[in-house]
Amino acid sequence: MKEFIILVDKNDKEIGSDEKLKVHKEGSLHRAFSIFIFNSKKELMLQQRAESKYHSAGLWSNTCCSHPRVGEETIDAAHRRLQEEMGFGCPLKDIFSFCYKANLDKEMIEHEYDHVFVGSFDGQPILNPDEACDYKWITIKDLNEDIDKNPERYSFWLKNCWQKVIDSVL
Image (cartoon, rainbow, N blue to C red; front, side):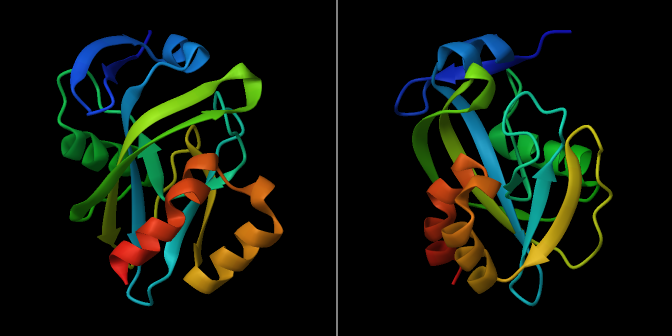
């Protein structure tokens, strides 16, 4: 079954929809979200993307990211996908949005208007193996150091917005 995602203009105004893989092949601007979950020790929960993902497979990334469905509010999609990917829910706060475009592996182009959410959780996730093959809690300092030393281990969008996330939550 083909999955359709929301196409937007540079102001996040909906202008249509198209099939997800086609959008990522053509690099059409579309709505997305990224979720960053911190624990009470201010550590970030990273997920390692499943090896079966259509791009950026096996890379470490923020806790959860995806796209709202056509007709679905972004916050509702964020809650739905956090539960589907990581097996838990928590309150989420929208902290900022940004646009980016990047050429990725497998001839995919990520061109997103990305809404960034943060939340707090101290439990253990229940990973959906189709989405994530591993997770870990990491301090801000350790993540900054590892991104500097090993940038190839991390998703483009995580590296692109991480400093702004830090500035927004500290």
